[in-house]
Length: 86
Image (cartoon, rainbow, N blue to C red; front, top):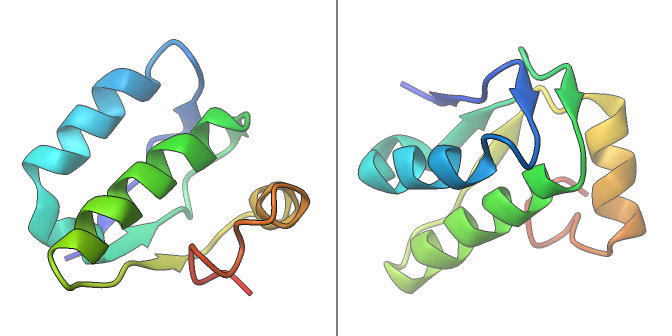
């Protein structure tokens, strides 16, 4: 079962979201961004933190249904390949 990102990921909820994800590490192998509508670059911060934790455990993360804006942001910041979005 994938980890579903909420509709909104901003500075207001990113810290709690990161904690929630780390508490459910097994589900972080697949992140579903299908419902993500309102976000800024902080979403990349949390995705990268999760990816780092998974890699330390010898696992990989897959990002599904990334909105075009997220794909563009990841490209601008040069992290598309790290997040498996390229």
